[in-house]
Image (cartoon, rainbow, N blue to C red; front, side, top):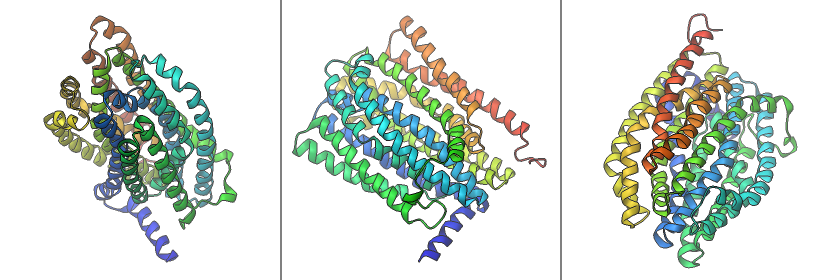
Length: 460
């Protein structure tokens, strides 16, 4: 049994570094997409249940300000954990078992320590930051309640994110999918129980969320305790190894800062939308649940290309690195075009899952028709930034993202919105910054591969 599992893990490794790229990329990314789908369904069910059975104020509470605040903390940590994924992928590809083991134990230790800190900080700032973001008065109590409960579950949340990232870095994208399916089903059951049966409203949704996070963390830890390769978790080795911490932070901190800046710029956007009242907030929240289907696909390919590039780069197969990037870019582009068509045609109908309020539906449909045609302009950002991280270059991509998206987005909000105050002016900041940053990434990527001779006969 153990020999069979070891053989399977070895074959997964060989498929990433030696298999047919487009085929293995799709086989690897499908569980990621389905997993992210269930993650989004996990969150969307919260919005559907409270939006349909409690009201638009509750809908805004679980997805407006609270969604941005959660992303500030979780997004930063997920960015840092991507550094662990790159380190594990590179060392796994190079066959260095000791470094893989040290990186795994360092990563889990970071998750526990960070989770404790974020729980304390989150509980302290839940109300002040909600007020600072001009959350509408009728939405504020629910927002504070949701955030306060959510932060109590921060430790298992971070353990799951880090642990599943480790599994994916070694080629195992299936187990994280199974965990999400289990917790998604559990979340639906608990949402219906707490909201429809026990009438707990936003509080019930929040409690359901952290209970599911506990289950997902337990499943990840159980799996890591039982794997038969260098990623096996041994409690007695759980500590921070300085060398691996340095490697993880060198790649992960820039990604974490990048995610933080993304979220801070989105927080400013959310604040601007909040100023237009509850209907635009509810419409933006509902739209966000729909467009998250696109971002889950895009981010899944981002994770996949980071793993594929990381393992092949660690194995010094530089020509294959470039082939992975080209084929991933083509697949993402074609998939994006299909999703743009679907959202543009059927998006307005899908909004009715969240609310029957006609004004909210009208605003949400306008947002969809304005935003989704520009999705195609984002593909280069996801693929190229993931590829560069896989090669160990995290700092300069972070700078490009911060300047091209975050800083430019903030400038737009403070300059353009006062001149033309409308929801459309606010959300125009997205396509403007996507286009600008894509151009910058394309320029930098081609410069980088020429400088480092990636995929040429002189590759070193």
